[in-house]
Image (cartoon, rainbow, N blue to C red; front, side):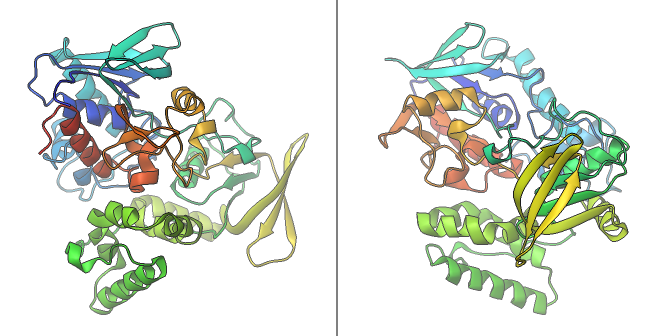
Length: 447
C-alpha cells in the first residue's frame, strides 16, 4: 500500500473534497491526486448546490468542519468572513455557504499544491484495472492513469424508476408552475422540505400535498447534550427487536430523568456504523422496511426556524401530510390524476395535481442509476450492488467488491455509495472520518 502514490477521485463534491484534503496531508512529494467533477463547481455537489438561503444545513455550523481533528474549522471560516458570530448559536448556515467553504478548501489546495493536486472538469464514464493500477476514461476521450481510483460520486440524481413521471426538484424538468397549481410531493423527509421551500421561494401559493408511507415529518433540532455511552452499554449483534426495545427503554429512562430524546439519539451516533455492521442481512432489511422511517425523523432533524415554517403551513392548510402510497398516476392535459391508497384505509383517494415531485430519497438500485461509471463497473462485474441494493458492496476498508465477491486493491468508494456497509454515511461528520481513515490506508500511514 505504501508504494501507491497516484490517485484519481471520481467526484468533486463533499466526499471527494474531504478525501482529497486528507490525502494531501501526506508529506510525500511524489503524491499525485486528480479530482474529476462533472459539474461546473468543485465542492458543491448535489447537497450544497442550492442557491436559496432558505435551504439550511441540518447540522449546526460547529459540527460541520471538513476536518475531524479541527472541529471548529467551518465555524472559524464563517466568522472570518463575517457570516456568523457567537450571538447566533447554534447557527444553521445556508447550504450554499457550505459549498463555498468546500470549494475554497479544494481550490486553495490546488493553488498551493499545483503539482500534487489537479482538478479536472469532466464526466468519468469507465474505470478499468491495469497491471500497475487503474485507467479512468472521461467522456471527452481523456484517459487518466493512476495506482488507485476512489468513487466519490455521491447521490444519484435521477428519480426512482417506478416514478419516471415525477420531477426531481431543481432539475431541468422543474419549470415554473402557475402560482395556484396543486402539487403532490412523494416523500415527507428533508428532501420534501427543500422542495416546499423552493416552491414558496418561487411564489407558488397553491396547495401542496406530501405523501409517504407513514406521513412523518422530521423533528426540529434543540440544544442539548448527547448522552454519554460506552461501547459496553450498546447491545451489538442482538436481534433487531431486542435492540429497538433497549433503545426505547433508554429514551424513556432519560426522559423520565428530565432529559430530551435527542440526547439519546445523538449519544448513540458514534456507534451507529458498528450497530449496523453487527446485524445480519435479515435484520438490516427489516430495519429498512419497518424502522428506518421512524429513525430518520429523529436522527435527521431540521433547523428550528424551518420547522416553525412547516408547522405554520400545516396548520394553515398550505401543506398537507398524507400517510399512504401512490397506487397509480394517470397523466391528463393539465397534469395528473393520482390514485392514493391511504394507510389503513381500503378506499382509493383521487388527487388532481399539476405536477408530481419525487422526493423519495436515494435511488433504489445504483446499478441502474444515472452514475455512468457505477453502471459501467457493475455491468462488467468489476463491482456489485450490496445485498440491500442501497449502494455498492464494499469492505469496511472501502474496497469495492466485484461480482465474484473479491475485494479490489485498486478501486475504492467513499460517502453515500458505501451506505450498504456503513449505513450512516450521508452526513459530513461521518464522511470526514471515513475520508481520514481511507486516506491513511491509501498513503500507508494507517496505524
